[in-house]
Image 1: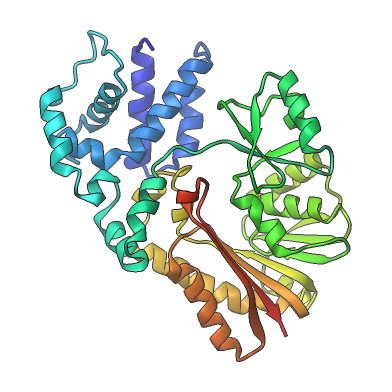
Image 2 (image 1 turned 135 degrees about the vertical axis):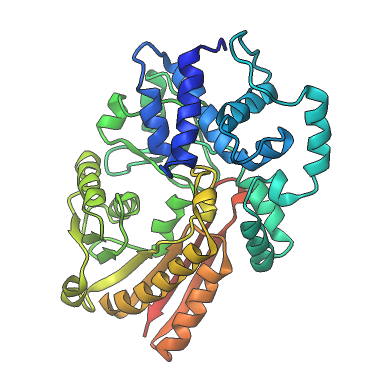
Length: 398
């Protein structure tokens, strides 16, 4: 890969936007790769990988490169460490002041035993992880530093796995099945799918394998009334609609109108007829009281289980922020449970791996309900198993 100044500038500016302006990495990457129309797919992929990897290993690169966090040239210096690690030759004009190769190797040895440094995470997060997960923490945080696969969910309303593999092959995409994941196909090589006919026709959605476990775990079926109370852009709503074979009702609720607009676009593309999007508010909850056979609460959380795809989240989080999430989870469980009909199911889901956001929340909720709900099933998906970290609990209203 031959480095050009605009590419180095795009990466440096992207890092500055993320760390100085607190912008979301995925939006920053999208913005940077569109700056120069002359860039080909290889250039755009290189910029994206550089930004994500520098964010992921930020603390590690600062340490081994002896870079001060306030150094005005820190973004270019971190990029230089990254490029050196990837064995990319520096052009003559790129001369950041970083230690020589021998010094960097010595620093790697020096900091290897410090997990907060070697795993590139804030000290407070390392302490929290050890406190909540004990010996398991190191294994999981190291897994979360691996790059993520692109996984597709076959839209069974329009096709099946065998047919889709043939369609994708004609478009030049190689995929493989994932054992124990009914509707999942994994891309063998990353590629932008948004302009493909197969995507535009709604034959599949991009959805991590762990997330694809939620709909089957919820045990939805034809004819049910289902409420997806924190639906976001609707990935799980669409999966449940497919599981229900487009028969029944799904109310997809969220507090953000922009996400619901995106849900409606995706729903139309997927061919779902039973999904309706609504802003959630107190009167809406009362209106839907005891209407749900299944209430899905995909609760707002720390997102520690999805650091693979959102590595900037660990630099934006704090203990106070996690405490806010836990308070919100408790409130949502208490308020939204009114929508479950007697005999119905409440399914609580997070993409966190912290017990305090997961099983502890369910224990507290059950204790407050005084026997109105019972725990029917519980599932933990660990990042070390290969995909996103998730927690799911299915409760039965008595």
